[in-house]
Length: 170
Image (cartoon, rainbow, N blue to C red; front, side, top):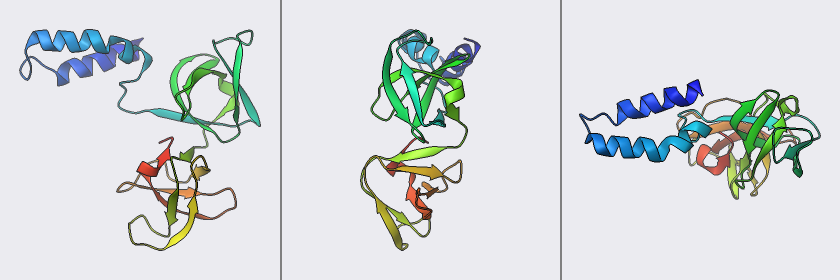
């Protein structure tokens, strides 16, 4: 809850009355409240990858909650909230559920949004090493994009650079 308060304070500063009328600032904060509480307006989105063979995703933060789907090893999941030992997550399709924190890994992966080339360097025009189809998982080798590119490794060991815009999970 403290994090949501900090996000609201940063938003209020950005929308200060010096820039916008107070009524507009108040309206934005009221409308953005639910988004701030769940972390949707966070400046830094957090992702984790499934670290077990298959993580059971539940509809609530409990082992007794209904099982709604399985997330395979390596699948990147956006972290929406945590209630130890449970983590509320969202997948590339937008589906939301709860997983046991122990089922998640700090090793990062991304998923191709569509067919995309993996290049020898992080720039257009560099040699295409291989291409990936939509949904292909790739290990993220560097945590942050460099000039809009990220370094990745395919499960067959081949590595290269892909446009950050072509993957989900950053």
